[in-house]
Amino acid sequence: MKKLTTINRPNKQSTRVLSCDFSEFIEMMDGVESGRFSGEDYSRNFHGDQKFGESLESAKALLWKGYQPDAMKSAMDGFESEFEATTESVKMTEEGYDFDVPSILSGEDEVWFTKQNQGVAPSIHIVFQANSCAGTSANNFYMQAAVVRKIAEVLSETAHVKASAIYSSENSARKSGENWSTAVCIAVKDFDEAVDERRLGATAHPSFFRRLIFATRDNASKFYGEGFSAHPFCGNTRAPQYVGIDDEFLSSQLGADMTIKIPQPDSEHFYNIDNAVAYCIDVLSKAKSGVEAMRELNFEDSSIGGFC
Image (cartoon, rainbow, N blue to C red):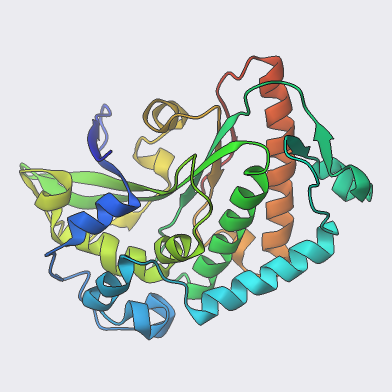
């Protein structure tokens, strides 16, 4: 459900947070026109492939059905091949098993999954920071999408998994003569949904941020509420915690037994396939340990990973 929240912080910029699901964001984009920032001239390295990134209108035209460009598909396929080669994938033969990363890493592939009779499966929320600084190449965005997809896919075997993209910036809106920070949090996969690669591909595409999220800043009053206006400098990409979106906020607003935080695309984890695979395995291993710890603590909130 669409929701606007204000985070007030002493001696710091206040932050306006828009939370919604994918379909709600599409509806809000209806009738939105490009402005100073969302209408910048097309650059392949900045906006990604031309079919989606050429203009705000081209991005909007593909948004309703999701999108996965060939370059993203190639990045995902390459990641998948390396991941499978690294972990020696074994398929689950019975529902209700847990993904056993330590066993994979030790070579004991026959015990990838261990039976758990613990009752209700945990809920896990994957939150990935999908915006990045101007110098970040499109391929970094694609590699981050591959990692998010794999983590959601694997953990969905044993837990209820939700995935959300978050776009957080400082100096990205104005109200009553003051600078504001903003954040948009979009649910890409809900707990009861399968991983939708095209929807993930759309939100992880560089032009989702550099066309569509920029459009929310060009049209600030429509997205952030009456009285808000565009900031003259569009905004500076900041990690969510920098603008007040901390663990407590994520837990109270988004709700899950565990939150996995994936850093922005310019993180070294997404420079190449080897880095991405190593990072993905590390996150899955920590998630496994975190689920076991939660069972001992009766599923109290926990958090792993971090934004840059």
